[in-house]
Amino acid sequence: MASMNEKDYYEILGVDKDATTEQIRKAFQQKARKLHPDVNKEPDAEDRFKEVSEAYAVLSDADKRKRYDAMRSGNPFAGASSGSPSGYGYGDPFGGAGPFGWGPFGAGYNTGAGRSARARAYRPCAGKDVVFEVSVSAEKAKEGCSRGITYQRYVSCSACHGQGSVQAEHSETCPTCSGSGRIEVDLSGIFGVGVMTMECPECEGAGKVVVDPCSACGGSGRVLSASEIVISVPAGSHDGDEVRREGMGNAGTNGEAAGDFVARVTVPEERLSARATRGFYLFGFALPFLVCGFFAGTLGTVAAFVAVLMALGLFMGFREGVRKSGRWWRHVAEAVGNGISSGLILALFFTALTSCTVGLGRSGYMGPYGAGGIRG
Image (cartoon, rainbow, N blue to C red):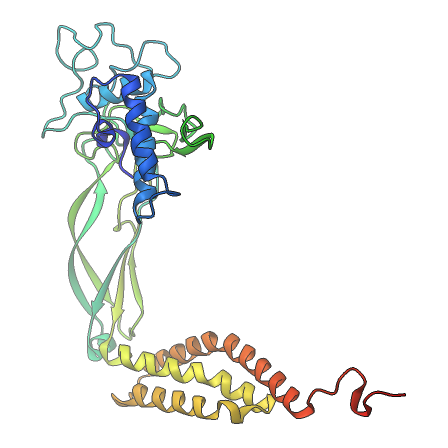
């Protein structure tokens, strides 16, 4: 979800930046009626309705609108007042037009590259692993080898040392939602549905924001970069084995730990093709029908179905030949096992239904008095 100041709420509502509260309310009513999910059945209607409601929630509130306009202009402190519990905690004694023309006394921090400082969600999260497939021949996997890999990942921002903030040492409570991570939009006057609660667009539900985001990383504490690594594939490796290098994955946000780089070994000689995998899956899918039908005495009703599936599955599975690798046979067993697990419940249901039908056909309907009919 885009942060609050990355969206043009005036454009979303179709009003000018100097629009009055009444004009904003009328514009919201018109758009909300057209986009309400109960009226508009287009696939994106609900998302557009929420976006319009989000814009109205911000622009209809004088304080929220003031902070929004300040962030859009590049001065995250202009909407706050000194000592205000709902502000950023930084006052501007010169009202945003001080003699220095920069910093907290001017028009905001000049961050370079055409970007201005802005508040954004403070959401510390550990970095994810980077998974990279390394294809080697069966001979190389047996002997062992080394491979150099160039890949892209998020690394810790050197400008802010991964914290996301240049000046402030700690995050601040979001001034839009007061730390709750949610905002409310009153729709009772339009649809009679009361108050609608949605995720706060400024902190993105985190409840905290970075007050002075780093110009290099935008406040996340990490930037995208190209990295190089040398991976040693141990001797005796097989398809599916993994080589892990700690801390070489994506850096976490706002100072959290980085993930790992995971090299997943692929050996073409030990792999099943997509066609062979489907074939062994079909074979496994048919097995529960065969076993259940045999024990329930209903095999005759499913014999043709089972025979076709098993024959087709074996043909597809062994069409490309049989390989002697133990790992290849393990992949075969996995595909068959997946087919069995998918077909088991359906086979039990079908067998129970068939057994009842066959049993009813053999006994016939005897009526409430049994075979003797009505007794005098």
